[in-house]
Image (cartoon, rainbow, N blue to C red):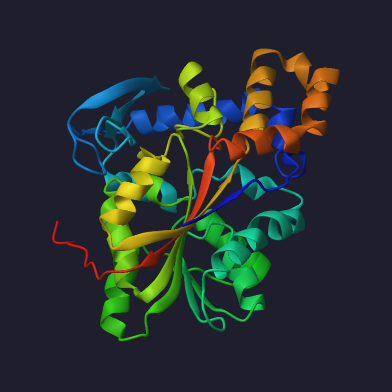
Length: 344
């Protein structure tokens, strides 16, 4: 297994709306939580990933109880609305993600989308093949993949994001849940994919292991699963536990799960994958600055804030190299056939 650390970045290029009005950005998440809590709640009594019943820690965030599994080190939400209600909520276009309002999309393409593609592609042998991007969001990944010669497909159930993709890239994702897409794929006889990417996806699923297994079933043997997930064993995770409900990067209202390196390893081990590479990088220092501004809005215009952003990359690099970044980009190779059980 190879490891890579750090990615130079300037959060002010795409996160300026958060910095300019932190209280409004946090308020949107608080309102989302209140909307979800107004729906009927379904409670679980075991870890959503491994089924473990022992809890090592609990934290309440904007009315939702999260538990840390003592077995696989996975944070999971103890209660959420029925999944069909969640899907209806997402399909109507809520929440409209913060990045939908970004102005500098070229910066995103060059500094977020393309580095992901390059890292994943470095583990692919041969010419560009077939790539499925699940829950594609802005569809920036398949847009760039097509420019690089890949045969790219995408799914996205959020209507606002799908409309954005159609308008800006002329690329319309299939508005299907993964199990719908998987069943259609299995019936179609289409060739298996070389790569399936699920960037920021598994935390949105009430039964994440099933979705790892569906990805396995659509991949060639030796094919790649690419994952980009928030890491709770990070500075951003520690900040979120210190001030629950005030983070824009952790314990998000619509999420069911909050992974760590250990819990991602558990999921991959139990779905026929072997980790090929991990890229540790994050925006923890930005999250720290945002939380300081939340407590003291005048800090935004201070010399101290400017100094932190001027030295952002050096500070974030230290956290990344300590494996305490709030993002993990993992590339795993399919080494065994695993079929999902979707009977339920």
